[in-house]
Amino acid sequence: MQRDPLSAILSLIEARGVYTGGITAGGKWAFRVPPPEQIKLMVIARGQCFIAVDGEKRPRHLVEGDVFLNIARRPYTIATDLSLRPRNFEQLYADAPKCEILAVGGGEEIMLIGSHIELNEIGMRLLKGGLPPIVHLRASDAGAGQIQWLIREMMRETGDAMPGAETACSGMVELVFLHLLRAHIAKAGAVKIGWLRAACDPKLAPALGLMHGDPARDWHLPELAKAAAMSRTAFASHFKTVAGMAPLAYLTEWRMRVAERELRESAKPVARIARSVGYTSEAAFSTAFKRVIGHSPRRRRIDAKIEARELEDA
Image 1 (cartoon, one colour):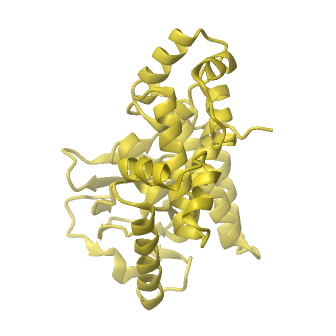
Image 2 (cartoon, rainbow, N blue to C red):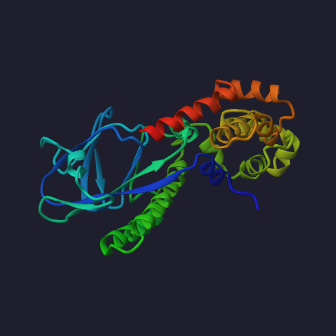
């Protein structure tokens, strides 16, 4: 069974949700949040507040059921009253247990659930290239209905302090992220031409499924067009309109992204990785890889080892 295109992309970029805790709050308050290290995803589980993101002209009003995704990892102020001098949010959590729901002020009118989305380097480039810096999905938006059930389940898990709540909530964060992507991509003109728009285009799904499922195969335009039930000319035109590139150029990009992940995560010889994505010549593969990625396969492997050592030493 072929994996659908969006699932294949989410697997390639290793998207993982991580639940980090939250706050319940009452009264008037304001917090200043520094630039997040990862993509920040926040759910408004109860109540309402304002968020003022650096670089945006005006604050956003967040209400119960809304989801906020900070792809640009910009600093922001979150408050019930933006005229207040904000407290440092990091200090609030400085001595708190991991994944704790902290009480702020008097009352529980508001509940915010925090999390972040971990992605590999490919994923960061993909999301920044396809989505706006900030995505605000309102509870009233089309496609947001399923998220409301997930929010209720996260509230139940955290409120009852059930065994495995952290793992359960992290899994639900991934589902919230998926539904947010679906809902945002479904909005006309919301997503830039490119990978994400192509992944959710029903006309292209059969052809993308073939390319993603067997990148080593020597695919030709006529068979890809046939899978999409379109003429060769119509398929090529529609593909370029949606993805921003020709079908076989997309195939080359996909092959190089798959190879890049293998170079980073495995010790397989370069020649073997080249064969796994359809290249019998290591030299031809290296040329294509450098053209798409910007440097040679061997350089990418060296960089990955340096990055891994830096993470171990951190």
